[in-house]
Image (cartoon, rainbow, N blue to C red; front, side):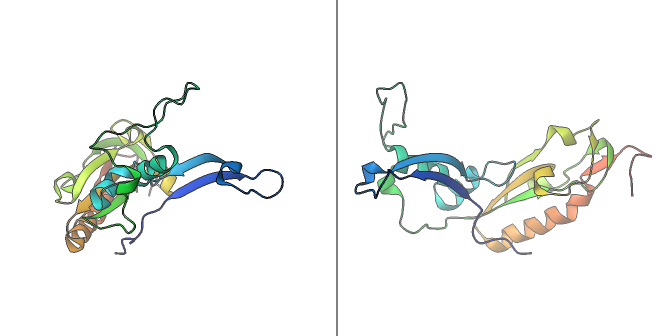
Length: 189
């Protein structure tokens, strides 16, 4: 299997320049629209923190807000103590402490769920967290997953060894078709 080397991310910033050419940084108006350092439907930050020691959201907030306190206009900005990351602590080049991946659970059946069985998945060495969404639990009517936005849950993998993580990933893929048991007569094949 191919496990991507670089994670997905998305940052959207609106840049408003004053009329004419900006001559100083203070002349440029920046508006943060969105920071997305997660894959669909899961928090990516814990995996990146385990793998490189920090996450994109904290780094971006530090870049914009620094170690400010109240701004005098009712707004509160981040303030750090000695244990939190500051901008000066962000390395120019990331160091990889561990390997990480997020596996999205794919529901391959349709009908009323009789049983959800993750089997050996939660006990795999590189599995650190698993979530099956409430809409895919016992008693719910489920449909087959067609897109990432329709996934049935997720699994966070973190390992000190790429080979170990890939073996666990393979076991998860083997188990995926057997996670949901549908009530008799409900399966649509």
